[in-house]
Length: 112
Image (cartoon, rainbow, N blue to C red; front, top):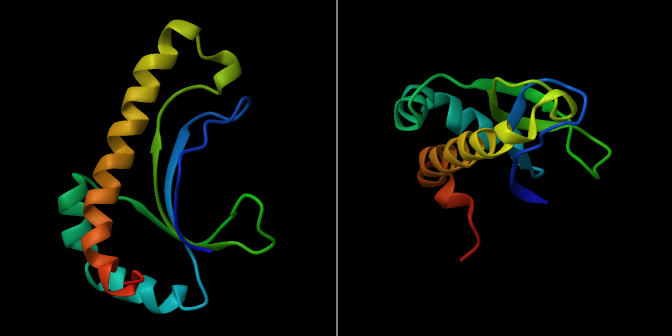
């Protein structure tokens, strides 16, 4: 539980997903805080992101609010192995930029 960053790349589905998910009982309150700072977060990230109220959380029964971005690519099954490293590089870059944009906004909710 808590704040989760994930980066699934599905074998069959197109587009890699980079997500910051709020798996917390106060997730709605934190989402409201983040939405009030949406323009700053998107400026810090370097583009607009999708804000989803019910994002599926692997290993959890209930979906949670999330901020996501997608990397255009075919499903891993159809992606030539020579293209895996460039897609991974894009995913890592997106994850780092998302963390840098969101972390300062949620520091008040981090444990001491």
